[in-house]
Image 1 (cartoon, rainbow, N blue to C red):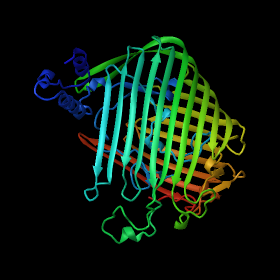
Image 2 (cartoon, rainbow, N blue to C red):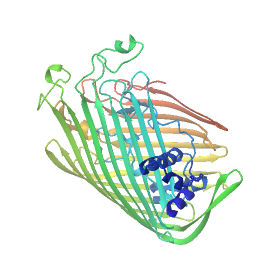
Image 3 (cartoon, helix red, strand yellow):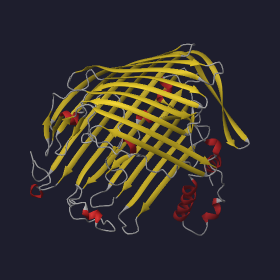
Image 4 (cartoon, rainbow, N blue to C red):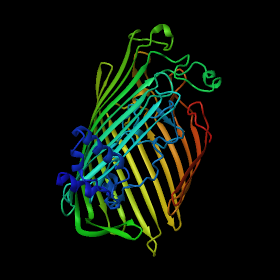
Length: 551
């Protein structure tokens, strides 16, 4: 074996491959390569050295001067939870369009198209982790399954994470997610693919740092219109793919997105050294030496460029009476939306010696919207502010953390959209071992999405420039044990002008909605036995606008 390959294998895996020279006699070289690949692939999930698990951090922590690092989980914990979409209702199979079965708190302010994007299955810039890898680190998994009665109903899921340091100052990595399910019924295939390349560079003293990533997402969903009568399920012991009522002429919804992101920041302060100790086995440890800046002031700037496209197409003929209207073409439909965005953000963070953190940012967003032969330029200006104060008890293990977040859109050249949108939250986190208590008060006002205000398609056409802002007020109380193995959460919210589509696909705004939820979660670990349970009990005052299960 080539010495470089031998060294790489020794540094990354427990096992040592047999002498490759014995493969070089007898069988063809192609067979040798296949055997070597099978040996590597079959061990890649379980053969990673334990002390090779890297440390990771998120952009949010870097921006807010929280230098706590996470250790990548290279065990098989939660490997059975292959479906990332929990508590959602989808169209019957992995990666198909979904909606949440609970009332989510208001999203981040800013322009939203409202067209479907399968975000749960895609890599997102906001969730990117940046690594410090002592050794090259790779973890991969593959899930497949099918019903014996139907060879077309199969599931495939592939995930891959690989990262390594090039010297002590630069890390680069790649993350891939791929999902495919042919579905249980005619024209039910759904698939998503997402790839991301990320990098983190910093100077020896960590004063100047750069994080960057490029993300490529796509999804494709066939839509069959559903069954005409539920008896197709109720009166048969098994459901076949060919059921009367499904559209044989498939509809298709596709999404593609490219995102390029770069952020750099500079820290002021004196250099510090910290030791991070990790347990390798039951009787041994690994110590990471982490040098950082005792920062009092940080200045940052980021740029993001995105290109996204949505395409809906079908060949549903007019005489099938599936759609009520055909405004442009009765033989073929192709509705499209393309969006290009360029964002600049300038931020400043100040941290005092008295555990006070202040953060402020100004963001300019430019959106080029290409919708049905028309182009519009939208200009948004948003400000962000955050204040955080920590009060420690004498033992330094307990304390009180007060936080206030305020985001406001100060300008939008299309006033019917996000101008005047805001979110404000005030929270108090109190720790008195072994109990953690979080209390959060939220107030938000946001404009309806583009699809709710304006749509120019072959089957549906509307403009609602008089829609009112969606106003939400909420109170959250959460109790957790210090190990965070169990939690109990209470949520009450009241939403005015909730915007939804009725059964005739008409845009409506509901009277004030009251929502109450009790959520309980329990994680139980005993040696190799892992048990996770989550329980929702909820009430919504107007289920026609927002149908949610009570339990």
